[in-house]
Length: 271
Image: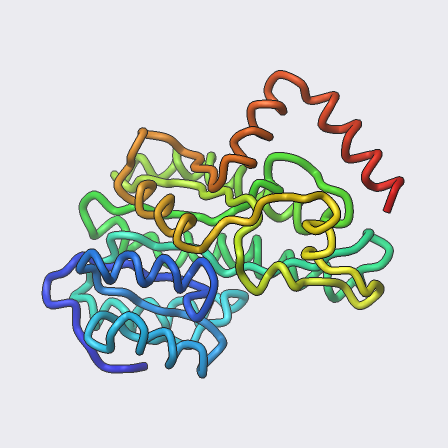
């Protein structure tokens, strides 16, 4: 871990902070004067990320989100640097595998569940004490628009993001007892390394589906802005969608759910 201190600044702890949405959020919050904890398994990526936000604006922490003991160790180290303050815990780390259920190995499925679901639960559990001790704190879980609908070739990934969405809704009620807010971020496709995800049983990747469907792809800066708005409680919402395409789908699911399911069946049959 690099040595730096918050010196009274607001602080945010970010999993998956070495790249993608996590790094985008780190840069956004650091620019606003926050102290940032960058947590990841990618040590080289963490070093580069800290250089991007400025060494005096944060610390790096080795963390495999699947390991509760590593969570406790990383947060203890972060608390030492932040003066015991945790204004926002951003559960961002996540992975995807793209392919029909039978094309994805059991191991690939388990990995998605362990990182995307268990990792978020462990973060909420391990971070609660620090969040409770910080007035006005917020737990932010990154789900996905795949937590709004079950997309073909993303069954397990969608299941994990439905789980994060449900977890967030439950914890919003539970953590209110402690004055801790809970928010859930649901991005549409964002330009991150996750778009290159495939499965061992297929050569197709998420980028192939995007090309075939002509879907828009949003920037990490757009995602980071939504996370910033969520941390500020803008709109007083639980769920924050990143991208107009996601908001459009959410509207259609509310009023025309049958049409959406029919469209996805057709996509699966045509693939």
